[in-house]
Image (cartoon, rainbow, N blue to C red; front, side, top):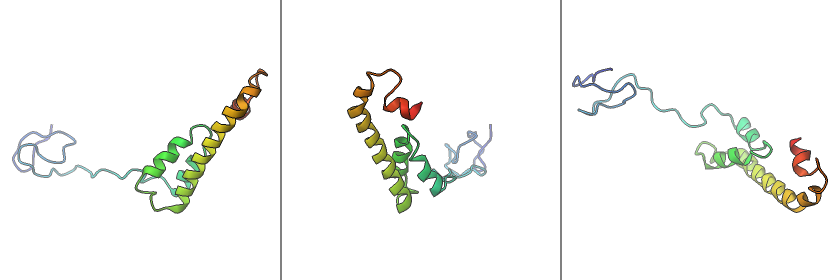
Length: 111
């Protein structure tokens, strides 16, 4: 266990400050930004994943990094609209295809 560089009290491995004297501890990296390694193109692409694309779309819309990127926001909203359209089609047409085994909107999309 490391010790404080100012007062000598024991501090944790990941502590940025000493609990006893409040001195900043060296060697603790600053926290990284969320989505720092994710490009705009990949963020846009994640929004179009069938059935689960609405999850990354909501995350992208809620993140600070992509708040001013109009292209990524467009694709995130587009992914949400496609998901809602898929739900409506599945809800409206699904019961008709449910009468035939192995058919239906889900069977055609998912396999």
